[in-house]
Length: 304
Image (cartoon, rainbow, N blue to C red):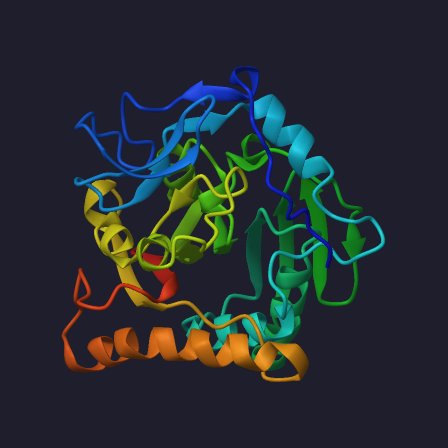
């Protein structure tokens, strides 16, 4: 997997002013500047006291993002947004509740080439050997359709292409932080959930770490939001949907313990451990005493 990592200097023509309201909760309450991302033009990292999430004061335009993400992946590499899709698929399969439908529909939003979704349904097929799967990928990168003896795969470039459909499983793994109109996107994902359907979300939450370690990267303009448990544990109340939170916890560590990854993995597990302890000893906390976990995951289910 090859991704662009170099810092980009954006100009005014690449940007839209996002200071008048919070793009995650639509609150017009003044947000507090936490960091300066760029001086000219000025781009700041803002904290919303209403929804407890962070966002950039200036958002990249749709034209900039389309150009940026169409060249995001090296064409010779697998287009995935996680270093170990097999490990993440195993993890998600363990989190999902039982579902005995003869056909399960799955939406992979922002999943690159759909690798995570394909590996996940292969695992689910082992659990439900008589179930067939219909995978729909929505990503800037158009992928070829595919069909085998237990799943079909098709690709769309826009979420509007599936707006009249419902899905039993929706994956939004490491994607919402990339989308400027995040409040609208979350609502659209909930709209697409079938009754008793599940939505898996994984987002980075690194602003508390950057407050201590100034050189810690925010990865702007790839990441325009930073979203942790205080935001996600209140989402069901912010949107008018009958939702249950099945899982809300520090996100899985994406790296392994082999080669050069072992030190990074040890640090990541250490940072997440206190929040896992809080989950064990506190009943469904909305806010955490420890907030330096680096990322969060949540699994929603829509009631009947």
